[in-house]
Length: 74
Image (tube, rainbow, N blue to C red):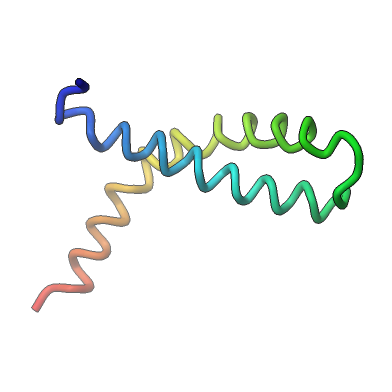
């Protein structure tokens, strides 16, 4: 098991992986349609976008949590 203190990093890892997969998949299909080789193009696009998305989520998530907390105070 992974210690609970790593939960925010693990959450960011999975969230950025899933979101970058969806967004890069949609963008790739829109750019080249469902042609031969689209899966390979999508994988390359996904990996490069995930490399940017993961650190971005780790930086942006605390700021977003703080903003939401300020907006939702009673």
